[in-house]
Length: 215
Image 1 (tube, rainbow, N blue to C red):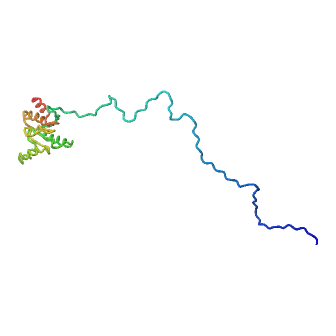
Image 2 (image 1 turned 120 degrees about the vertical axis):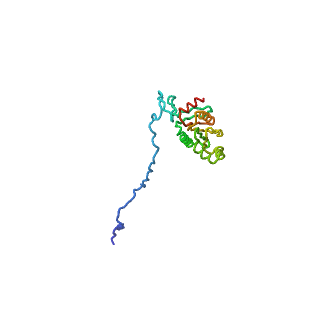
Image 3 (image 1 turned 90 degrees about the vertical axis):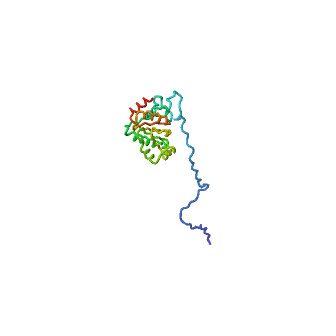
């Protein structure tokens, strides 16, 4: 038989692209991404806040209140002080007619109480008719009347000639009548009773004349 050369064998394969890696090549390795590095330093130069040597400038004004100069130091207006009596008490005169002296004395007492003065520190004297409060309290008897005086719990009203009335820090005199001789004796006696303040309610001309005559 004649000999035939062997036919090459054909192998079937699945159709599709063939990805044959190149010989000797490896897969690329991903490079690391560089992170944020330190910020560059600012350029060298003179800082804005630095003080350059040179002539000194004007001094900055001091903080806080500035002391006033002697010319600017003026005290607030103060009410004029009254005259000081022989016993050291301050004398205050409230002009009023004889018929309105008691009302003026009552208003003075109200102002004293509103200012914080204790009622037991006030004594009210009259040179003419006695005060309506005194007349009312005396209707219950002198013992009860003078007991209130000794208790010193409230404002006390008495005749200026009453020697039993003792002194208190504030004495208010209502010159509502009486002779000049009576008034002339009552005012110095009231001044001696007043420890801090003597208030006289009445006619200023008459009071000045009486005090001048009995000075």
